[in-house]
Image 1 (tube, rainbow, N blue to C red):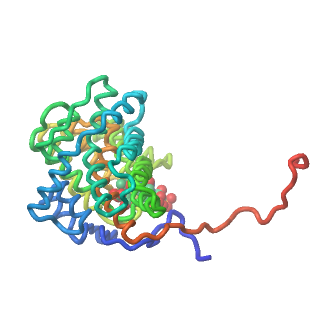
Image 2: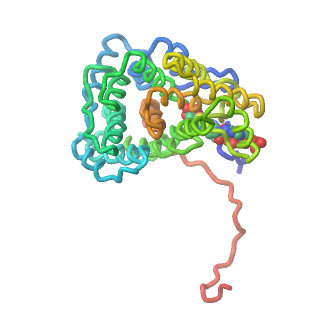
Image 3: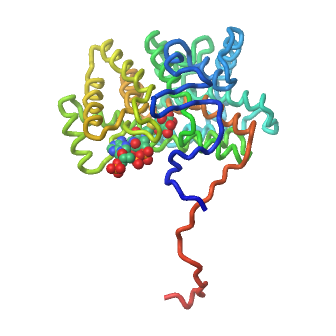
Length: 374
Ligand SMILES: CC(=O)SCCNC(=O)CCNC(=O)[C@H](O)C(C)(C)COP(=O)(O)OP(=O)(O)OC[C@H]1O[C@@H](n2cnc3c(N)ncnc32)[C@H](O)[C@@H]1OP(=O)(O)O
Ligand SMILES: O=C([O-])CC(=O)C(=O)O
């Protein structure tokens, strides 16, 4: 058998037309469209369309997808009933995983496995993600959920449901930009998990449930929540160096740094760093940005590691007043566009994903009856 590579590092496991990632140049494109162009000009809805259809939409196509997303934001009452049954301490990622899985029972036509039916599922799942997250925030705080609006953007509605107030234009723009930047990233762990599940021809709900589970860990999407907890512990920019130096001397990982593919700046971090600074300036409080910069400089100097997408998104969400444990669910509410695009691509040209393991266990061992074992 060929030699093994732990963690499948640099192993090319499939063909994909969705996302091109050059870790040396720090270049990221979705169907050939540069992430910087999407960040400057697109919206989350348009980016999701690009991921699902492989091309940027016309006005009419954009209008249609926006309309579909807007009209499918509500959750079935029985999903809300299910959420009410969960202990209020349930982590939001667990709530997301459970409700997305449960939504399979409400599929209008579960037998329909056509591309068109799966595209509709992709839209529905994307539309309800913010509703699940915001409803959970309300329920766990003993408040009635805020019903979604159907006449504002995905990002504006998300912030509205979280707070019960219409967000200002800048906040909605910032969340929209964060959603664009997180929407896809080639064969990251959660997307791979989605494709492995889809590869068995399990349905889209099953694939997305796998993806949410994989995203939740601190080495992947779960890092953003840990970043802001670290920034809060550091407290002041002047403490950053000693905090990081102590953590490194204990051989701890600094969350939000390092990447399996990037050997240079993560192009998403470039935008998130700038938004973190801008939000700090607008709020007249550059504390979180300043601490982040110090940590970043020190990590670069000491470990030659760059900030990844999770590092600056943490302070951005914090300055948008988003509760810390919603950071990873927000990541999921963006990545759902990429996950579903990959599931559609997997179904379109499916082959079961089943690698091998190099056996390193004991040699053939005789079966000893239990009464003779020492
Ligand atoms: C959306 C995303 O998923 S982005 C990634 C989010 N995750 C994080 O931010 C968690 C922190 N980062 C990490 O744990 C890693 O960098 C990962 C998991 C992202 C990538 O891991 P891998 O590609 O397996 O790199 P690996 O773990 O082999 O690290 C290589 C070396 O860099 C060090 N290193 C990597 N990341 C870090 C870090 N964040 N802090 C300290 N040291 C680090 C490792 O200790 C290792 O050093 P060594 O060779 O002296 O032992
Ligand atoms: O690509 C990866 O391994 C992790 C990552 O940055 C992402 O999923 O956005």
